[in-house]
Amino acid sequence: MKLHSTNTQQYQTVTAYDEQGVEFNLVRYEHSLIVLPESRPVVWDVTNFEALTATHFEQIAALQPDVVILGTGKKQRFIHPKLISSLSAQHKGVECMDNQAACRTYNILMTEGRKVALALILEQA
Image (tube, rainbow, N blue to C red; front, side, top):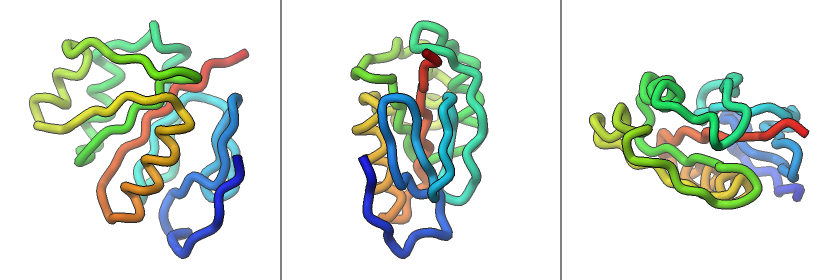
């Protein structure tokens, strides 16, 4: 899906997504990543949902987002609360949704000025 351009190009905005990847400001990524509005996407070493560990969420917690949107792949899945204890200790919410919904939600929260972290799991074919 292609999204319409906005005047938020100084931020990391999702400009397109499909089953294999995502674009931020027209740059395509086909690996799992973490992104915040004011930071370039960084590689997230998650190969699939089952590979998630508490360490993956500690990496996100270190970025100190207000809220975390977790894109769980092609379908929505829910994580065990013990995995997000580092975020819970900071009173940060984690919302789980499929990648397409996660991308749309991230763009909305980002345009509202929220410090949102988008963590996307992009499984390799």
